[in-house]
Image (cartoon, rainbow, N blue to C red; front, side):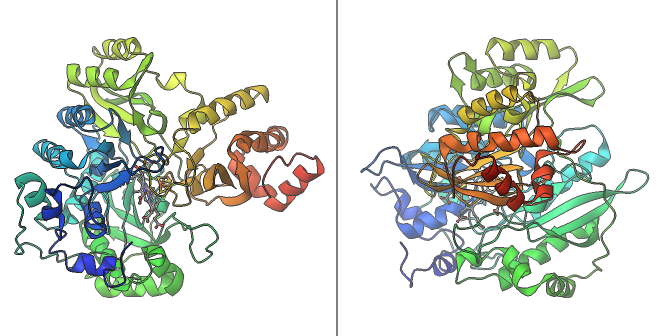
Length: 560
Ligand code: SRM
Ligand code: SF4
């Protein structure tokens, strides 16, 4: 733990642009870093972890997260990730819920080579973690429509504009220098101490909330005029998921719609919001340091006034926008004339080879053979882009030869499910998530079939702790790790990401999650209104009424 004197704020401030003890500790004999260095490593996209399956020993290794704005990669960049996964990591690649890749199991002595090789393919991990603007999300669907492409290009441009200026990353990992010079540490946006906490941005198309735009610190929703020209963005502020069990001061929150800005004002707008977080965020209490608490504590009106004072242009009234749906972009989709993209579901984002299901090898082969572009989705899945009509059958045949499951092989409930990595890598995990969700999905599929509703498209998300990395609080059904093999069951999020779920039952045993839901699903099947989703149904009926129904029928399986 850090002593008071060594608070994270002072480590950041004294780090000479995020360098601190890193250059010297990187080359010492230890297999891990000290606490101060460990904190700075996060800004470089690196987490010190240990294998939590191994009790009694700390078997150190590192998670490395690359920064991929909008989830976009070239074939070459994908293939470098794929190669490094075998060379230095645990033979898997993990697509994250923010459209990036993670490597797990990298040893300290191989960090530099990993980052250097990524850098040679123009991929960075700087700012993938830490108190800084994280990977900028954007709808990944490729298109030949220049207006739509303009939105994705804007997200990349925004990401560049918010990129940290420090040269420490390059000096430490790429040049391999042991002393980091002080001269280039001017950070006009972030300042010496960077932000009080992480800062997340998502850019959405109107009507398609695939980026879960309301859960971001800043969400931008593109607005088009009647000629389909991108004119600007509606601005959402103050979303965030992470809470702490039994700490009512911590909250989940959806962003508030605060206004509209023109396209050429949007970068300055986001910078101004970042500076409000920088200047007013809580630097004493990290559990209260996200932007959402500024809005919660001071109010939206206060925030808008403060923002207006920092803008050289007016914050206009929000424009009308269509109701959101969520498009996961799976299957074959037109990308333009004679071009297609193929969305392949990746269960919980884990790209690996298993017996008879060689996803990693199959992807490598088609990407290499046809030089395909790659996009990662916020649902932890992958899009292979720019496939010609003539190439389609061969692409599909190669994937099939490797046993790769395409979207038609997935039930809806599995297709829309998400889980965070949790055990054994995540140091904060209380329970399992990624490793158990596939078998929970099998149980779910059997239950839905028995109930005669096998195609029900439910959104189920599971996390190993309440930090909310798979955004369970906007799912219709959320399983949130609570204590050893026990979960809090959240219900009632809206499938389009515009309503929060609420806790329904606490301390449900892992093997009782589906049995607990079964009577509710049967009740839903029998009594829901036309077109009513499960999330809307449980919200309309109110939780007390549902608890009474389950108790009266003696169907309350678990929890308290
Ligand atoms: Fe997360 C911390 C994994 C998206 C909220 N998250 C972590 C760490 C780094 C654990 C740690 O601090 O020691 C996890 C690494 C586990 C591992 O072994 O790989 C981790 N978070 C992930 C990923 C990989 C989950 C996934 O299933 O893909 C996602 C990486 C995204 C990326 O590419 O940048 C990931 N994390 C999220 C999201 C969802 C989002 O951003 O859309 C959230 C909720 C939104 C939000 O930020 O409010 C999220 N992660 C957290 C929090 C709680 C933050 C808070 O404000 O309370 C933590 C803990 C912390 O920061 O102290 C955390
Ligand atoms: Fe770890 Fe918790 Fe995030 Fe899961 S939700 S990855 S357990 S921090």
